[in-house]
Length: 321
Ligand SMILES: Cc1ncc(C[n+]2csc(CCOP(=O)(O)OP(=O)(O)O)c2C)c(N)n1
Ligand SMILES: [Mg+2]
Image (cartoon, rainbow, N blue to C red; front, side, top):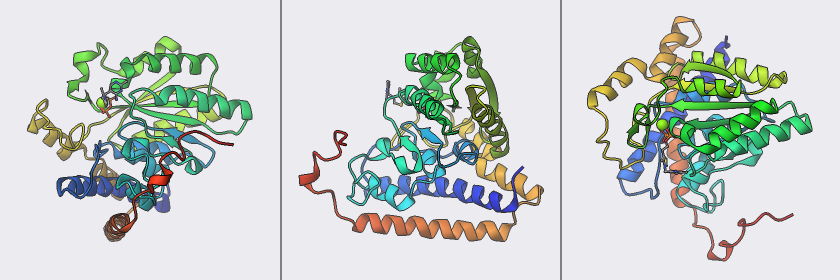
């Protein structure tokens, strides 16, 4: 169970991710923001439900759809916006962009353009936490599409054998690009794949913050106690296309409407949290206004910031001492 204060934090993060992504969509369509963006709208409860349990020493690996994970792990919004605009003030000095946002100070090891590539990194970070006895855990977010990648199986296998403090968070949004999951995968609950590695495996309703929060909490506590990794499948849905500009010819309007009407993670959170006496409408409205202002300020700061200097093109390419 969460406190009233925590509930407001949760709402603030859900709202920030939603509004940040909606703003990016509008900016791209207005021709103000370049780049190839994959929006996280619809999946907010997964990132927020998992990261609500994480501490400073815990690390996260993300995907091509990574903005929500970054925000939930505490990466600075203004720095993220500037990064997306390719400006020198960006979190990676404007040289990474959407699919390469990383912030090691916040335990965000990186978004990743290579499907499945965050999973061996998650196993490695969990091994590091285990060897150094930091008490930390490593979380790897990934999609249903990544479960047909060899790296998924290799990472889960070694994590299970070595009982690593890793949580593999599978965001099953029903599609890998334009392919429905059932076209490419025979099992319905992808979590069953954990069983082949004798790994603790759970299924959560990825649209319901409270369900994700409870199951992620169980997985993270197990990992902290040294009881090994978990595969946590969160059933979710993306409200936008695969990328901004996707013509979305592979799903019906009715399907999207069903999810938006019945399973919107923000609406579900507001309803449940209100019912439990955790939040009130006036406080939520204040957060909405505050988040909107913060995002507007981030856009203004990004658009006013300089581009990286050509002289810096080769810096930050290789690790130095
Ligand atoms: C190794 C690799 N293969 C293919 C691609 C192209 N690609 C980018 S995203 C994507 C679909 C990923 O689907 P999923 O893992 O379900 O994540 P989602 O986009 O649904 O969040 C593919 C095939 C890639 N980036 N990397
Ligand atoms: Mg998917």
